[in-house]
Length: 166
Image (cartoon, rainbow, N blue to C red; front, side, top):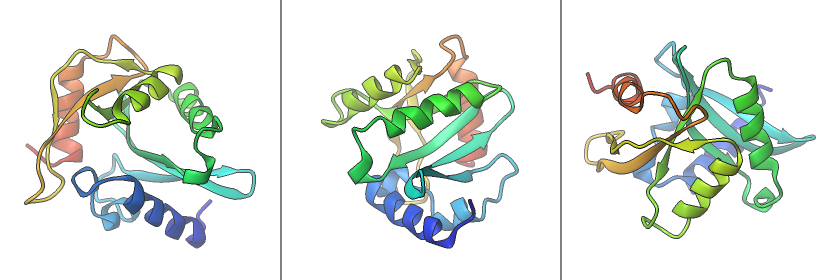
């Protein structure tokens, strides 16, 4: 579904859905420099644009870096449907980062959403490195579709490959 209109809708949704400290430059999404990703996947609801996912594939796990649905479609089960499809179609566990409960009003709701979709919180003190100089580190949690996944190994891969921290 390489549709230019979808790309412009994804960019607008991306900028509206994620604060600067949780965004990589858009150019890094549409023209990734890594063989691992990110891959921009457009989601549809029939013919209509429904949202996007950005995915990295590390072989031992798939990292869902960003996931957003159009605001007018939220609360209708579309996001959970796409999340479950991702988990079911992945040959390796799916991993994502979430805000810690209490960080903001939506954090616990997001964690509950991902749990209903088949994700588990990993017991690990995780810090997202900054995407660019001048941006802060972000204390987050890791979730995975496999509760036995080693969070330290996941964090090391993410820091090295996604955030460029060698």
